[in-house]
Amino acid sequence: MPETFEPKIVAFFCNWCTYLAADLAGTSRIKYAPNTRVVRVMCSGRVDPQFILDAFAKGADGVLIGGCHPGDCHYQEGNYKMLRRFALLKRLVKQMGIEDERLRLEWISAAEGERVKTVINDMVAKVRALGPRAAASQKEVA
Amino acid sequence: MKPKVAFYWCASCGGCEEAVVDLDEKILDVANAVDIVFWPVALDFKEHDVEAMPDGSILASFINGAIRNSDQLKMAKLLRAKSQVVVAFGVCAQLGGIPGLANLTDAKGIYAEVFKDGVTPERLHQNNGHSLSLPEFFDTVVELGRVIDVDYYVPGCPPTPKIIGAALGVLLGSELPPKGTVLAPDEALCEECPRKDTRPEKMLLKEFKRVHQVVADQQTCLLAQGLACLGPGTRAGCEALCPRGNMPCTGCFGPTSRVRDYGAKALSALASVIDSDDEAEIARILDALPDPAGLFYRYSLPSSFLGRRRME
Figure 1 (tube, rainbow over the protein chains, first blue to last red):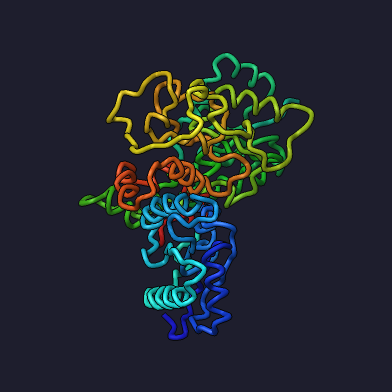
Figure 2 (tube, each protein chain N blue to C red; figure 1 turned 90 degrees about the vertical axis):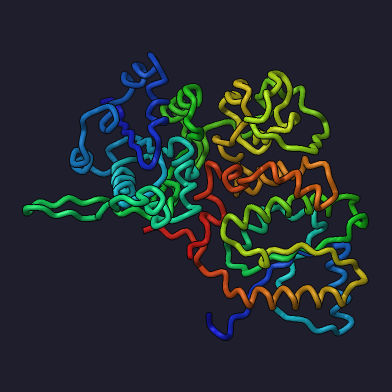
């Protein structure tokens, strides 16, 4: 692994909670690892498992999903839908040889700018320790 | 002169060949309409006969099976050059199929499992000035469309006589559909399932059951009974053969045209019926699905976004 390895983390943040928290982190001048590429979605329930697998296939070293705390979803239960899919998807990606730390779901409310920092820093550190998710997953043929 | 067609098999079980024979007397109509110039399972034409044909002289080649070794790769390329149209026939050619599950391991892993304490095959064997060679066995199985240009797809494991008949009708008709078309209805299997009307408006399950654990009711929606039926995420066209036989759909017709990764979408559909907001309870419910990759990617692992398990 080259010493300069910087993990690429694709983050799907919901419009109502986690994205606002990231915004708050910014306006509060909170510093955190610059490794995430944030994609704003209306709800964590909008995150199709296809988005996550596509991100991994296109070279993401980790995927982070951020949604509202249980009971706080702007659309009542979108985050619960994500929770159910995530639980099953976790089991599937494990079979595909993707380590646990590379796929993460967090509930972060609009007031928790500090928590955006903690979660991202923690995830970046763990994924950096794992190393690149290598082209090893690419579909090579002769 | 009648148009020429060829049939070939790559990594497959022979079921697709069987499906062609299952056309019964209709196969005589096919034989009347076309000249079959190559069909290793039934007719005695050889590879060199195909090599001798001018490029593009075959109207259509129907290739079934995935690509898992160098010989299949070579034959797929040869038939592509000789054919105006290539049809990926059956789900193995379309999406990778059952042989594609080999992508959960690699060549070394398969050799270790199959030949455990025995003799491992040599690629090249020489004896008394004679030599025998075996094709290269790839680490990764791929669907046909990844190694050659494919014009049309006929889904199914295997394609049903009705689907094959309809596909032949389309191909012999005056107007060809757009390239890349899957020659089957573009809607979910539930639409043609006889149990459709018993499907609850809001599907909620506290428990999944496996087929060996229950005797399923003959009339009601299998998913509503807790069986992991993949009908909601699978393309129609088979007329719900498995649900009619009291077995849940396993997804052999692949996805509809809007879906890019069949397994991810089927997983999403199944997870959404879980009736719980509690992490521990969700985990307990999911324990009844011990092999998600095998369940959701049974026929489509090579064509999925990830394509294979990460190689060490």
